[in-house]
Image 1: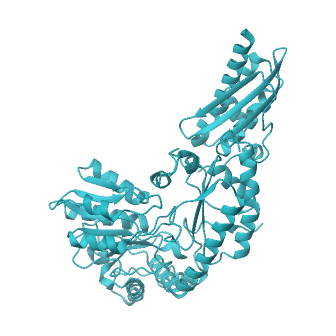
Image 2: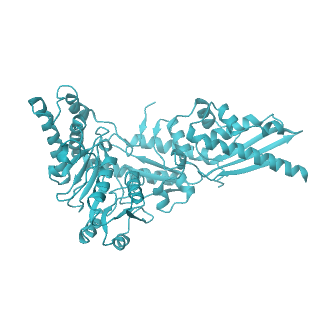
Image 3: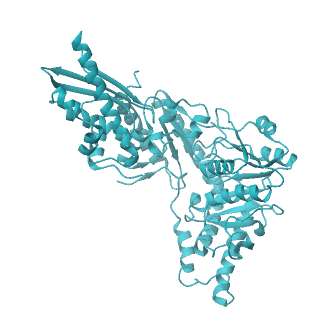
Length: 125
Length: 386
């Protein structure tokens, strides 16, 4: 298999924002049926800005690294800007992923989408 | 950082004595073994010498040995060769669900070409059930192919009894002995086999060389057509350095086999016990007793194998996994699923395979760092909430 980039290994061995948030404003829990990976993303939102994000992931090196990078990318962004973060953006921020691992980055995009959706539905209540 | 290499089931480092034996056959004794001049006589003799070493090692006649490019070719040759040679007699083949891909995908290929294949299930320890095998045999069964020991979980099959059943029904029997030869006794008569595959790089020989034992009287259609090499059973100018290295590796392996099997079995059982005690929610995969002396395969609940391997690699520890994410297929190991593991446990498996240079100290180091790695990964896993 193609090797992981240094950035992937950095985020894998030192994942940022691992854990859970007390009273999160949005939660995304998604699974990748392809390989069984699971990711849980929680966000804290203040004045339409994501002020905190935490994740827990069951998965390979790529899945953990993309989870970690996704939290770094969304913190400080408005909900609208966060919505523009695709799996490609996350993978690029990690200096790329081996081709067979690209599907792992879908997990982060889907988790983010789900968390924002959850946030919106909670706002309506 | 010194590497702690615990992936000997994948491959081994070529022994320096093997390399020394091979070197003259690259440059000084380079003659084509098929040529008539004296330069070629020494290469011809070297091949026949290696053939004799292997034949003696497995209780065969040298004429029953064909050198190949490795285990995969030997498996392909045995299965496709019988399928083709006996196609007028029948088109049914019996194998197991936990074979190496070299056997499994060869059978799948034959299925696409009009053959019928029965894939026997195995029990939770990864052992083929003899009564199921006997029931699967039909009048048109032409071949049974079941591995000697499994490469992932180390379970050793009752090959001798399977061979007796095959004999009783007049069916040819092939075994892939790639993981066992050089590590535990392999004798073609004790095992009742007609065909047996071996590979050089699994016991400190070079890569790219293997052999197939073909019992006298077994009709086999060649895979590679061309010249008259290997008694017309496999064309291609012989890989002389490889064959010489293979012979030397067999000699060295047999010399230490008995002692090493005892030493590695002791370290293996100790290591398994230590890990299972130190790490909660972990389990051993494969047969607890009838297993390769060097094989340890453990599943850790709630985490994923590749993540464990990458963490081990940071400590210089090399191991392997049956996890989906390590493969391009994205499916967890067919072997682990066949022994009844849930996807959860199949994903979190790690295989450590010991070798002749593995020391107790190295295993102690792994046992020291692994619990922390497992704990760290579980802390960030939404699938582990204990």
